[in-house]
Length: 285
Ligand SMILES: Cc1cc2nc3c(=O)[nH]c(=O)nc-3n(C[C@H](O)[C@H](O)[C@H](O)COP(=O)(O)OP(=O)(O)OC[C@H]3O[C@@H](n4cnc5c(N)ncnc54)[C@H](O)[C@@H]3O)c2cc1C
Ligand code: FES
Image 1 (cartoon, rainbow, N blue to C red):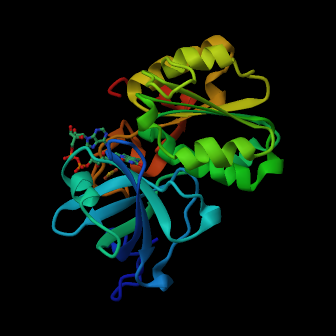
Image 2 (tube, helix red, strand yellow):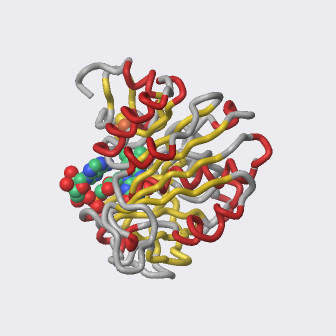
């Protein structure tokens, strides 16, 4: 958590620490997703995060956006954030370069309860930028590889150029013990020889067994809707399915009421929920 107030000693929940961008990497061919490695200028202010947690990243003079921490806690600082250019803040962030300053406050939200999944098979299902929070979790699980059973990583993007984290997908993860990476694209190109089609039918084609398994899914809402139906047909129960909710957020600390669904504040009680928990939320969601 960011530092303490000099007057009260309370944690400064809303005050960002200043960080420096140490590296920027294009994830997609079009450049609409970039990964930023950010170090805090004061190493004393560095905080620890858990897989699934986020931070508010601010561009000074523009604003701030809630972004998942995509690097595993096992890798420490600098932290990585993969950001899709959609509007004002993310656009301004995309225009920054290594050496530029940003603000960071966090870590916020709950976590994927991966330590409760020991001995179980893991199925990760993601689409597009939805792989960002899942990547943090995958790397955490791989750092504790012997704690888990077989791992399936099922990922899709609109085109081969839109697949994020290519080094992980093609080089790193397939080399891990008992780990399979399954990729699909909505539309191939001349070089793509892999599967073509949407993630939900692809998931059913692969057909991971629900026995002693946990499925984690993140991606566009329309993909999640059909992935949940596919998982149910494969025999996964609501308790075996974990996903994230991405409502618009402002404070990130349960104070502004921007992200509540009934009594739940997604920024504090989420963004990670089991499908059983989501089904208990009021209809307004
Ligand atoms: C818990 C959480 C984790 C997130 N993790 C990531 C991440 O890892 N990488 C990433 O690129 N983005 C992530 N987001 C989404 C990101 O916060 C928004 O894209 C960002 O705030 C947009 O800010 P902007 O000023 O660039 O866009 P704006 O100018 O505010 O908006 C541009 C367009 O995007 C829409 N929009 C803005 N915020 C959201 C949102 N949260 N959900 C859906 N539509 C939105 C607006 O309605 C508008 O149409 C996450 C959001 C949450 C809540
Ligand atoms: S973002 Fe303010 S209460 Fe959740």
